[in-house]
Structures are given as structure tokens and as C-alpha cells.
Length: 85
Image (cartoon, rainbow, N blue to C red; front, side):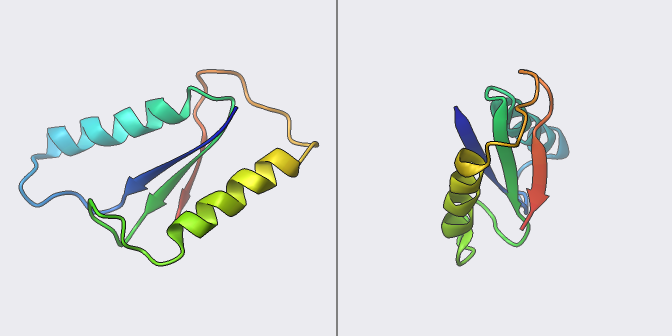
């Protein structure tokens, strides 16, 4: 299964460092559930992910992964590709 996880790049001001770290690790773990996954981090976004074009980019990445027959899926549980956008 192809999977794209989208995470905010800016933490919540009221959250402490440990909470933000746990949230980031949870998103990384979520992306390991598929051996064909990508973790997009929206650098300039908070909780609402209002970055223009972000969802379009995610869909393009999914289609590219589905169409690319040369990509060898990674082993389950290994870290996915992370891309900051």
C-alpha cells in the first residue's frame, strides 16, 4: 500500500518539547506501516496545514510511487523517505 503522511513543521506554542517530539515520532512511526511511504513535513505550517499546493503535491507523490515499477519497496518498519516542503 502506498502511504503519504503529512506533518506540520511548526509546533504548537503551548506544547512542551517532549509533547512535540512524541508527536513527530508518532508520525514517523505511522509512515513505517507501509513499505512504500513518504513523510512530508510542511515547514511553514502549524496544525491547519494551510500551505498552498501541499495536498496536490502529496497526490502527485502517491501517483508517482504507484506508477514507478522500478522502485524496490523498503523493508517494513524501516524509516520512510522524509521530505520537507
